[in-house]
Length: 205
Image 1 (cartoon, rainbow, N blue to C red):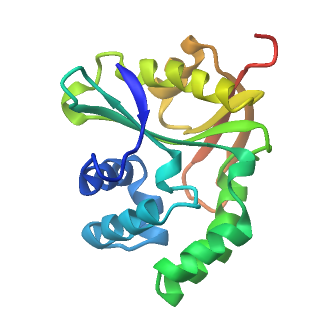
Image 2 (image 1 turned 45 degrees about the horizontal axis):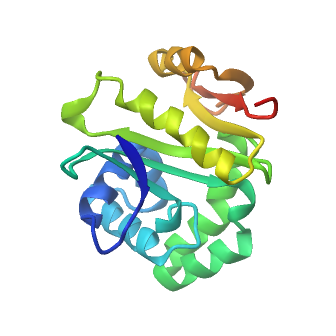
């Protein structure tokens, strides 16, 4: 298995959009659309447009020797994403309501729920394994190959966030070598929700 950059002409963007949507249905429901079909359609627009955190240039496909999709990774170097650049894309691809939510509300939400991304970080925003292949170690292989992508981009660490309740994922990342670097508690929630920021250092390699 090897990660490949998303080829807009080769892959089924509807399938890719649906897989990415699956990674955080609540977030996409809040900032794109409550109706899954509409949210997936809007996500597809962002993928096609590029120059945003869900742009095609930040999406990598894991496939088997027959070309079947095994998983999808959305990841980028910190300084690949700029506020003004994203705002322009949101303005041209979304209606005004969605543009406002993505440009002004989501960054505040991200600051409260996700790790602070440095310019030389390689941030993994979304990772999903095809439903029929889960539990076979593919997620670990994708993460490990992401380290090569990060090195190619001269990043100092790989960074990701995992929600408190997903202890299985946290243990998986720890086995691979990630360490907890921060913790965000969602104080407005009635439950003890929140996220762990986890990092894998590349400095001493």
